[in-house]
Image (cartoon, rainbow, N blue to C red; front, side, top):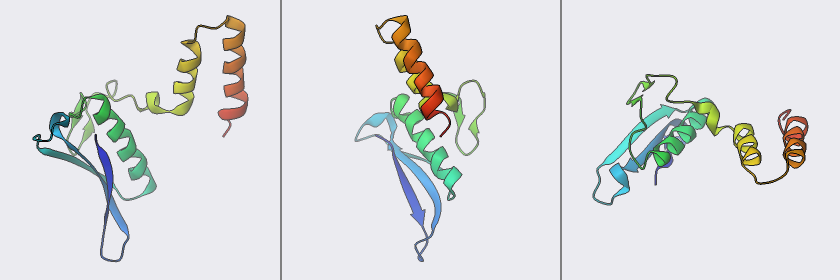
Amino acid sequence: MASVVPRKNKAGDILSYQVKWRAGGRRTGGWQHERFDGDEDGKDAADLFKQAVDEAGQNWPPGWVKGQGYIDPSVGNELRYRFDNWARECITNRTASKRYKDQRLRAIEVYLNPT
C-alpha cells in the first residue's frame, strides 16, 4: 500500500511530500516514489496521487509521467476523488425509491456542498 511521507529539513519544516510504494505491491518489488511540493496544495496532490496508485494496483497510474503528472487530462480526473461526487454516486447506486434518492441528493446540495 502506498504511503505519503513528509520530507523535513533539520529544523523540522516540511519541504516536500513523497508518495512511496513497492512496485506491484510485492515485498520484492522495487521502491517507487513521486515528490510533491511541501505546501498544502502539495499535500492534497500527494493524497490524490496515493489513491490513484492504490487503485492502479500499486503501479504507476495510467497516463502519469514521473515528475510531470498526467499527460492526458481525461485520464487523471481528480474530481472523482471529491466527496460530493462520491456521495452522489453512492446515493444513485442504492436500491431505494426515487423519492428517497431525490431527498438524499437534495440534502447533500443543501447541507454538505456549501461547506
